[in-house]
Image 1 (tube, rainbow, N blue to C red):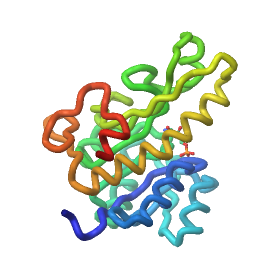
Image 2: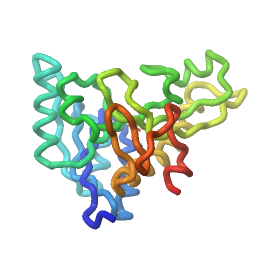
Image 3: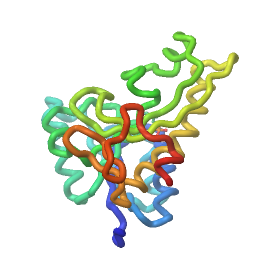
Image 4: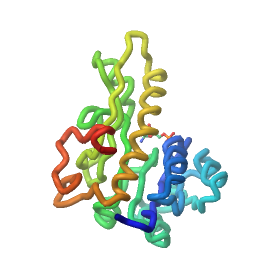
Length: 218
Ligand code: GRF
């Protein structure tokens, strides 16, 4: 049993509702949000960090000549906090191979689809256009493949006949706010790990479709 809280750094670009869910869950004590970093100065999530007295940094990608130079500045800012976990929460930048390799096994992302379906953008509309009966969100370890790293856990919502992309997005966001803190708590407890390209839970490889929240919290 870990006694010290697991230090996490959260990367954002916008609203930060997932950041808020993580800040709220951190009050339970097994992880601590050491810092928030945004690539956009006007990200609302920065106000959420300030309201919770969490250190934040703005590192604007527009100030750097290349992706690699930006990622290096980001890496240095993260490492100052010596986090055990780096959490992408609506961070709208593709990360370089060097960055991903550097943080391999301690970098996670939340994506608004039931991966491996709908990597990339506009996932809610794409699920509606495909006539899917369900949609959701996935938390995965980040690898060099965009939205392609091993899935840790997923949460599902039923698609209703009268859904549009907005209503669906709102219900997916609600489950994201349960799912992400649950994954971080479980990682902080030492039960979730990345090993040899696989996500591991309690020593066993996690199936490709990930765990559900109930199993994660068992
Ligand atoms: C979420 O839908 C998340 O799945 C995606 O970006 C969105 C971030 O929303 N990666 P918020 O900034 O946490 O409100």
